[in-house]
Image (cartoon, rainbow, N blue to C red; front, side):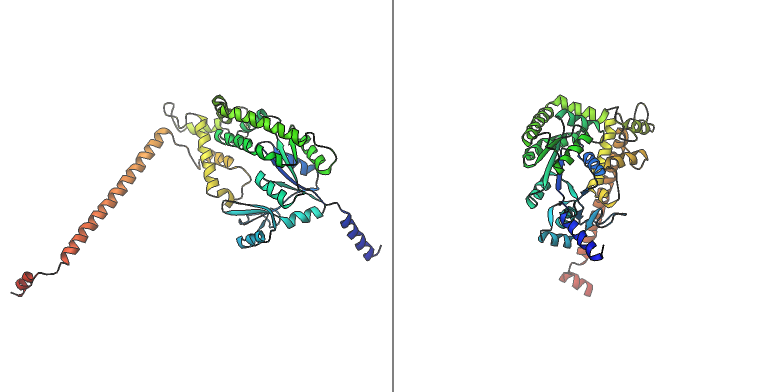
Length: 371
């Protein structure tokens, strides 16, 4: 075969290649969406994640065009003005967006491009690319979602309630999606999504049936959250579930280690709840201060906070230590205020003395000096 014939055949194969799909996946927090997508991509190499653009600086080891397209703010704004993003958002003073050109290039290569984004971004993609397939993953029931969130052992009770409330709110947007898939089992769900993308099978639930189930979940979640007894149950499960081993070391081990520095009459912490709240505050501090963005981390902030506590880089104060520290701070503040007042008083005296020295001499004083 000549070079010309080979080139012609290659061009024909590219023309005959079926364009890939654009799949936008959303779902309730804790529904297992990430695991399902990872399973799908591992078993079917034709699926690829969309590479986003961002204005944040690359972390060590990150490569432009692999983890992100790293853009200056000026370039990002230029792309935005040129309508080169399917969707975009701002987070912590940094911009993120889905480049239209990258998505289309991969689709023209025959790849199915996956976007794992929130509902607002998903609807923006649908407006920009009407042929995109929007898929929302839900749990089999409200009980299944509650059990998954409280059983992970990685969030505080407040965070669990926040995620459940968000699920209630997002249900109203589900009718804008094309498919609703129930995640009974990861492998089954991944197979169903692949079948929907390729058109090999019809969805197990029609859109109407999926919306009906989601509305039932919303009703059950709303009733659950309104019941004070259930809120107490969230607290217990989120903090005291003995079967959870995802936090290493466990909160029980941390409690024993921390209390080794106290006494039976005056333990450093009286319950694991103190440790949960302490590490949660530290994790929030890392996020708010941009620490997770500045450093290269593959773990959650809470896991890092637990490690810091275990290694003594941060510590939790007992009530007695806290009161002593607070009293010390108040004494230091009072001393600083007293010092400032003393300086101000001295300055006033000095100023008055200066004014007296600068008072013009009277005629009598002049005559006395002349005599």
